[in-house]
Image 1 (cartoon, helix red, strand yellow):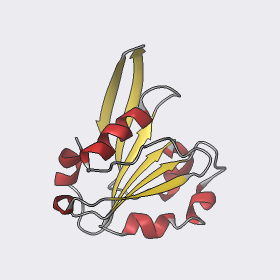
Image 2 (image 1 turned 30 degrees about the vertical axis):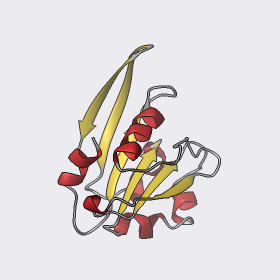
Image 3 (image 1 turned 180 degrees about the horizontal axis):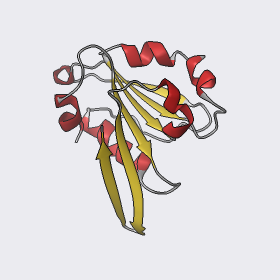
Length: 132
């Protein structure tokens, strides 16, 4: 899945993927698989309390050096994220930025953001809608 998104990425800024859905809809589980596809060995957990985690991408074929996992669930608004260097992270083409609960920072997201909307079907089934 990671390689599919990276194929059409911008050469000017980061690949930004926003994951929108209710609690338990599969956002973090999706990112665990996405990170595994990038060759990241560390365990991916939702960074609800630290807000943002950075993981190094060692596989050079992805032309990316960093994977940022951001969870906006506990923030009050865009300023909280801007204070953590969000603009710098999304402006570098060497970064992949995944944002959970992106509706809280919609005003500061670049136009080329990819949106994944997670819908809960049943205990084992989710529907994911991809929007650009």
